[in-house]
Image (cartoon, rainbow, N blue to C red):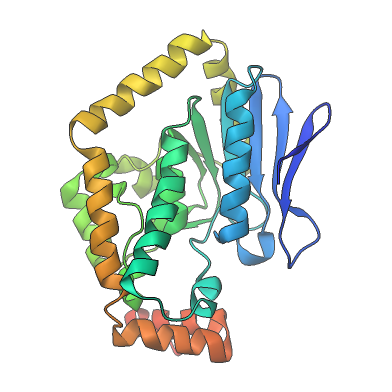
Length: 290
């Protein structure tokens, strides 16, 4: 469903479990601010939210008045990753289905990277797994000092959908983060390793992100957009796109391996709920009681 328009704000696609649209957009001069609006689910990425984001990206690409995009999350967090409850409800899939789903998810992430206009991630609190993918798919990231990052996928037998991490922080650090499944990387450490561009106090996050967007928007749009393409081309020449395709193939192998940890995580999710499954997962690595 296409966004409905008024003078300054747009609403895109509703989630069946909530009355409000799952993506809200607002224009502040030449800056369009897109807000993921699944606060009860910590803006977990499900099919509806991803579809709505693609619609919002298309709308922004065709609007000549929009020069820069900001992506943020409503409520307590930026994004807690892919919706694991939706994954559990999807049941068992064969390799063909998994490859189709993973390829689609990966291509959607790349839509942010390849969008003609700069996209700034505005992050607060949790930015985990698929949420970290989403932040890395954006061109820049301004984050609050209460933010946490990381990929916990390995801890419940899953793989990383979009392999942006080594391209941003380097192979050595990426291996450390992905092999351990660490999901409590604080904002200052994220800045130190080059995961994000700036860290600001939580109450200054909106203003700081908007100020950066407005600074970019002052420049000639054609030059900014062409420069983005040129920087992206450096990755492409180095094999970025081929690496993403390879990761989709390898992640399909992980997801169809039917590993005991993954099966148990799904079972607990379906029988006791996602909160119980996450408690079980974390207890195995942090010495906490499930």
